[in-house]
Image (tube, rainbow, N blue to C red; front, side, top):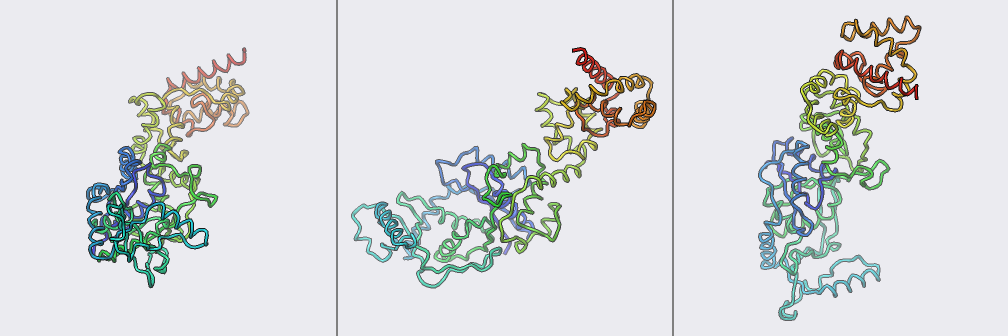
Length: 470
């Protein structure tokens, strides 16, 4: 049988990082086995499900590069089919009508808590004649679950897990208003979609026992289950927004590359020896569920930035330029012109070695597109090195505009003045870039060109002179 996996988010919010990892594992497992990866939108919570959330899920998966097979399935549209199967079980005698009122159930739960007993439905209508109920009384349909023996799951991550059947109550399949419950909808949809392997967070492990019972009641073979430990923060606590529990679009906006996110999410709970950098093609070839750990993974922004920096350095300069351009356009308040793109194309190799995100890259590249006001450290260097910068400026009128020639001129001046090269280069860097950190300054100077470089040096010298007068 061909492998079919699925990702089934609820469109009640963004596609968070844990959901993205679940989608990735399902996608990799399907691609590894040459199977299909399907998408289901579990939109039965009509009050909280929104079209905007659906689009964010689609956009997030597309950005991550997780393409799905076939059309997405929308769960709510199949509600009547789900209900039909509950009624079928009722007719077959493997489900029954329960007329217990909400007040009765609340009283039962309170009594069980008072006695220190497990809180679960005691089956008060399981073998009772429906004729005992008042005429026209509302009812739910419950599964007549097995009461003896065990339900056993051979979980691909957790190993063999089992529960005594007398610990599970008769779950509701159809509510009093005729709408199906989550448990019923999930089982029916997974069966109808041909899902062979359910890979999801281990917070669903208890659901798997009930769903297995429902599969068997319907006469279907349960899928293979794999329940993955959840993601925690660096401190070991449940992942929250302060740790990084953000929507996938937030990581895109923070300047992370999709291929880096795939690599990082893959290593959150899955390993292949000591390999850290794993390209997607290699991940597909290597991926198996037996390499998923049983302990919660810990989210670490520092490690994510390191992985992202690696992928940025591996990205072709022009491809990286295309990706950073929207970030630069936002800073500039408009699109890049041909001059700006030409400078960035020439300087990208020197820029990308120092950046870990596209946001950092855009910040460090800005000086190629417009003069940048000196920051506090640069202002101090300009104030202290104005004389050396002025001396260099005079010699630039006759220096050939190539990195080697420009550096040789600066070195000759430093030797004449009896100072280190940095005493010349740092004021120059501050004047041209507005910072004390940049790509190799003589390379940057060549890319800016003689006219722009001289103009910026003149502006910096005038500013330093004005500061001294004031």
